[in-house]
Length: 294
Image 1: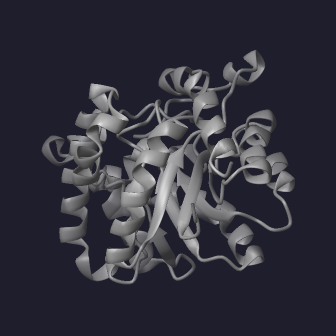
Image 2: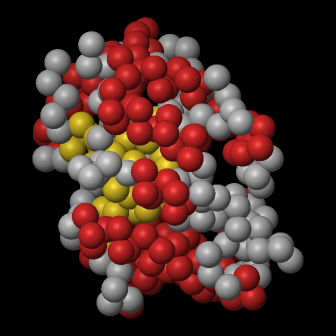
């Protein structure tokens, strides 16, 4: 099968050297074409030095969920604890329009996003690639976070975002291939529906600004944790056809960068991330990216 026009993408690059090597193996020996780099990764500098001369497609992986803030902690105190470690919850940000904190959250997220993007801007300039962004656990599509991101796009002359991941799953494709891809975790349906609602709101509110931003057909949330090679092969032909009709590329997201080393897991500040990163599902997704071209 011709895989040109597909971005086989891995999130979370830059956390740890061993974990990032697992991602690069999928680039060297498999079909991986793009990586999202987490700007507050514990071993970011070492991981950036490991990147090959011919770099994959790069994206900034905006993160409000795990690790330490990049902006000064006193400027983002609603997002972090006394040690500068993120402790804000998804629910806090989702409900911020109803709690009277949306303006303050928006200001602080804007500062943190600005700091994270500017850590990686030199890498984009050096590689000659346009600035792309997405979000850890897709928090960037939350209204308060997306509005903060659009503030940066509009107000900061150094930040010119050319791609924002919109994890808007093609439900019709899944229904047509239901018997070939079932089963999958029911919670992923809830996540996908919620993301669709949030993205529709974001596009409605920022339609003018989003006209110049690249979009892609996206697969990855519905099968998060079980996106194996069987499901990928079942969905890719229909997804490529859909992308062709839209005049877009196809992005397939997986998380092949497992963290199994105890000393590294001890430095992951978010419990959900520790469980996710150490799951054997990471091996399944890595195997898919390594075997897709066989």
